[in-house]
Length: 451
Ligand code: PLP
Image (tube, rainbow, N blue to C red):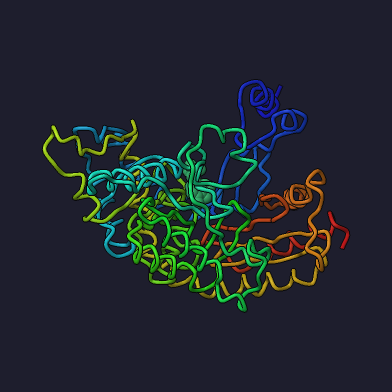
């Protein structure tokens, strides 16, 4: 029995895959990735696939990036792990300095964890505890989150999230939040039309803050782009006004840049595009260039200072993970940021983004393409049954999934979010590869939908 056959057997016997109906998985042959090189994934038979989703938002500079490989190897020769509880370590200090330098202004204190969901939990807990420790008779104990939000799979993150199918079963365990409409303009929750609406969703948001600011600790947002909701891009000015209004009503703004951070939107952070400085930012995914599980929650000196006190006052932030500040992860992240600087990655993105935009335009002629949403090097292509009415395909048809499987046969890995096809290649994607990705997506849509 060859290696692959045995691994398939063992995978089916032992591995429980995330967000996966395992009965279906067990009925199919899994694709087992063995290697990566540049913008390609390579399976056990040596077949190459373009990594069209950056291995789930993380592979920033492609696979096997020499500088990051080396940084991890060098760090292993020193130490793989030591705890940040009661000790410091070299790379976590160096990385914190670099993060504070590139983060939106004022975010000076870094709290490490190991995935995006924990970065969000930490942000929520910091915001909550801040008010508990700075206000007498504090009532600021709730959060505002947006329709369609996704912030991760832990309980706090699920509570602020709103993708029904992900959270429905856990509802009895989730805390209540105030929900405000996110500008999903293609299917406006307020049934208005942009730009005629003049961002009416902001009025709803302001009304909520005006009425309830005494109860609200913070507002969490996926800035400029809601990822899991289907790559929903928000119109210019929305984020900036959310910042203005949270400031006006004394509510923390928590920017969840787990997905949007590290160049994905064309700037280092989505907040940079509208010059927004949040009170707390959550980072993960691309932070190590796709090498190690690391995340960080950054906040201001003002918030941090509210946690200072005598030991007995219990103002401490009682939170931490075994791998908080892991040296291997931090070494990878430092190398990742050094590559950004040395190769002037952000500065070089503009041309690629323009090309991507033009290539995507060519999909508009397909009759089942309802809307193409695009920012930086990420796009969502929403497929519909009827363009005029925006009627969706019946969920059971799983058209998005079929298109992605078709793309896989043609050598491209992309993923669907419902019937939205997501493209988010590594920032190192070459022009010819970008063209090939969009071509394959086009062919696959045509093959599946017949139009
Ligand atoms: N926040 C956002 C905006 C995300 O897109 C994700 C994951 O997709 C998370 C948080 C959770 O990150 P993780 O999967 O690393 O826990």
